[in-house]
Amino acid sequence: MRKTIFTLLLGLLTLTSQAQQPVEKTIVWDGLDRHYLEYVPTTYTAGDSAPVMFYLHGMGDHAADAFNAINPIDFAEAKGWIMVFPQAVDWTYSLPMNLGNFPMGPSWNAGIHVDAAVSYLGNPYVLSVDVNPDVDDSGFLVKALQTVEQEYDIDTDSIFFCGFSLGGFMSHRMAIEHGDVINSIAAVSGNIANTMSTLTPVANVNVLQIHGTADTVVSYDSASVSYGQYGPYNVGLGAEASTEYWRAFNHCDPQAVVEFYPDTHPDGLTFEMHSFLNGDNNSRVALLKVNNGGHYWYNGENNDIDYLTEIYRFFTNTLDVTGTAENGEKGLLTVYPNPAADFIVLPLEEPAEVRIFDLTGSEVLHEHTHGRIDVSQLPNGFYFLNTATVHNYRARFVISH
Image 1 (cartoon, rainbow, N blue to C red):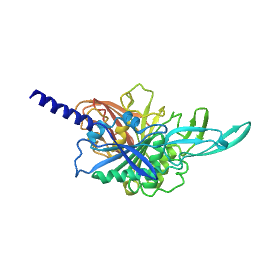
Image 2: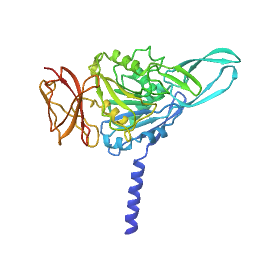
Image 3: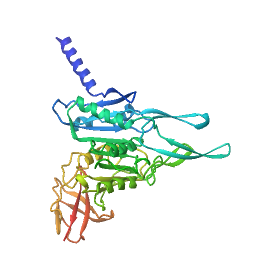
Image 4: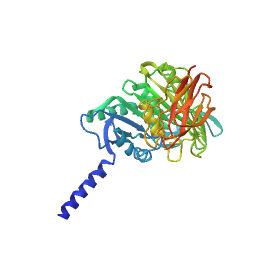
């Protein structure tokens, strides 16, 4: 009897372990075996309509390493999302005149072109470089998506792409070329590649651009990259220009709604979200500007925010005034009346320190409250508030006297 119980428990533990690991899938595209990791939450059942998120790794990285770095298992289980981590193909750049080869590792064909000025034997040359130009990554990713759709019941209105560094560039390419099947993208430290910036997207896409102002790999202002002693070389639009590209195409409001996140960690970073709303087909574009941020994925353990959480909120359109806070997270709080004239009311469960900021980020009011705040002396305009409670709520509201 004990042996039987032990065997059953061992089997259950084995099943649990298997369920908590991604599965490698292989498809053939353009004559190549292409691979991706797939994680399906244990809560998924046939007949469900599950959202799907593709995560594209950076140059020289691998899908397995990206999966371990992001560690999306708890997220996928909690949200019921299918997670896909595709693998790029190795790229080696061959110098002209048989001068040598540069192995660059797995690299997405995101449309990056570089004209590099170099010197050889005292003579100037310009090297024309395209990153992995012979690989059809765009077609591979569409085929991978179609394969997932064939195997599972997918919410076709909730197909998302997210990428870091070169994976961010590739996410932009997917949105430009295949926005008719993609709802939203998030590009972290990766922008619109130079050969993509002259194209017109096929459809409106919700776009979240995340970039650190002190990024020394892909610069915030001009998307210039450096490789060791070489560079910088321009490879595309800067973070703000990439945001403007999508804002203009989507016909979003020209004026951003700006949200300043509470600065609660001594990490030297501050975060601000610039949201452009009311685009065609209800599209949205946002720039999460990370002041003093580098070429890094900030995970929330030692920072004011967690990238994956913010990406989820953007994808699900919960970066809004109304919403329900989740315990332990910087939740969204409903403010009423909104617009307000003389006062606002916050549905707080406990007294809290509340700070209110205007569009410039200047603090205009700070008080301890049980929920009702007098705003009659504040001028008309957009405002943001943060609360210092265990939940760290935040909200946006309008004053109109």
